[in-house]
Length: 305
Image (cartoon, rainbow, N blue to C red; front, side):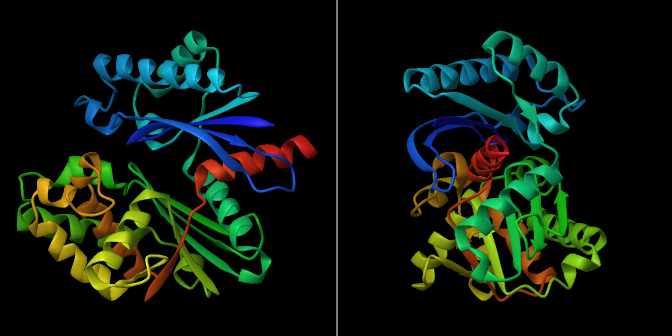
């Protein structure tokens, strides 16, 4: 069957149309993406602004049209932390579903971690043993660990790259004071919130997913001639300083860094480094599958039951 997976995230509204069948690998057919950055459309009270809502409706409408044009049998639509945390999120979801005739669901942080973990498990297989998964999105950080397809422990924290850039970083280049304040905040949050079951994960494979980690791994390969399938903690430490000293324009000229990601890759690198330090990881392996693939796999499993 052909499934349209609509991811209403903090950075982008991303539709991926996939051909998916039970027992087979989901194959991307086409995609449609709008760089909306919902975290930049929040008012002082934490609600998405009228302009942000209008842009969101336009992006969702265009995505649904793209799915229909490409003969998607079903649209699996979900929203993550930007709408999950917005004061007017439930009202926006209701309006979107009525206007565009879809069933957009808000994922909790735990659900986000569990479905991303499922994707990682299916990609690596059972021989990978116990997994530790880390995912940095625009609005939140997810961590999960376990030996099965359902993790035994999950954690979701509001440590996304877009959110932290908006809240902590200003100037071009960023000020050293802002960078230090953000580093201390992220480290403190992880120390306070990370449960013992994750801190002492005892994983056989430590895996990172999604755009932030893929970009950082590619930059590490460019700067240090390392294998971009992995990200080394030592390289990441050096990258934070290099990236923080650069302007938005110079970061956007690096391989794999778009104009929209140039501002927030510094915050993403800070979260990645702090997370790896707290978990005592020297290296993570980059997995190409993440939340959208997990949503497809979960849907196929449900249809088979």
